[in-house]
Length: 284
Ligand code: FAD
Image 1 (cartoon, rainbow, N blue to C red):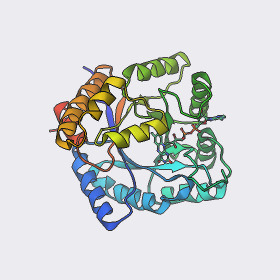
Image 2 (tube, rainbow, N blue to C red):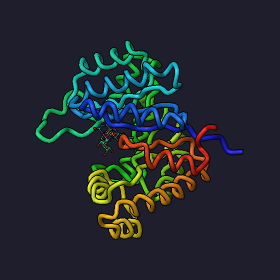
Image 3 (spheres, rainbow, N blue to C red):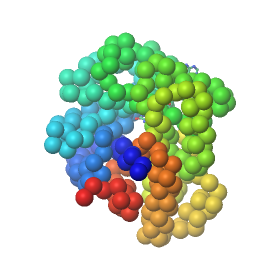
Image 4 (cartoon, helix red, strand yellow):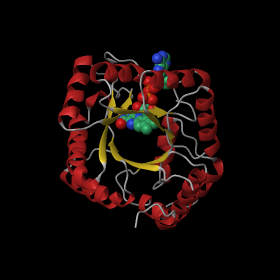
């Protein structure tokens, strides 16, 4: 029988009291999935640093009862070594031992890239400063990072992150399973021995997804974008369709024995919970 995949869920850090309440509510509801960890994004240049920290501390403080670890994202662009050192120490002081190490993108208006140029340098720094304290996740791009000159160079850069000490990778979301399979194949050929966890993006709003996908280089297949476009303002029908779509998509990944599933929750319980329920991933 296939092993159950490791589930993880990603949140963005809430900024308001209402947002914090929603986040805690969603985190409680998604605990039914028994995820290994909840990750929380981090605004490059440190813009959401305090909110990220508050959110991960809240998750980690509950870890003894929930079994769900916190995994802050940490983006290095625009940062100094000393600044990153302090953040790592704060994580350690709060019993956090897992993180997602990223370069990030410089926020508009910010010009100084700081002391790190790429994520591999951050991974190297974390290992040099903290040894094996952290389980380090990095980002992977089955459809190629949008700034990469070509797929081969992008893959070589991915290998640098693994060589620097990454334990596992989470992919940018994709809706082309072949892109994921070819990427995993390539990792195997390069003898990279780390799990490549598919990142799964639920679809709640087509125009938002289209905009976001154009920026991050995730392709929405033509048939899918045409179907989504046709729902216009009929949110209920769109949600019914996308929940079915996501269920089939995730089932196909499970059939491939993927090592894990990382859900980009957008701080919403649905459709992730329903999809997992339909797939029999909720523990009784
Ligand atoms: P890198 O791995 O450094 O790659 C960035 C680009 O530089 C690529 O084109 C790569 O080919 C190239 N490159 C890499 N290394 C080298 C090198 N040594 N020499 C030359 N070129 C190189 N963004 C946030 O701001 N906050 C978040 O919390 C966040 N979470 C994310 C989580 C996941 C799972 C993913 C997939 C993305 C996330 N992002 C987040 C977005 C991410 O920050 C952007 O995609 C960013 O543009 C690249 O970050 P990276 O860590 O992949 O960069």
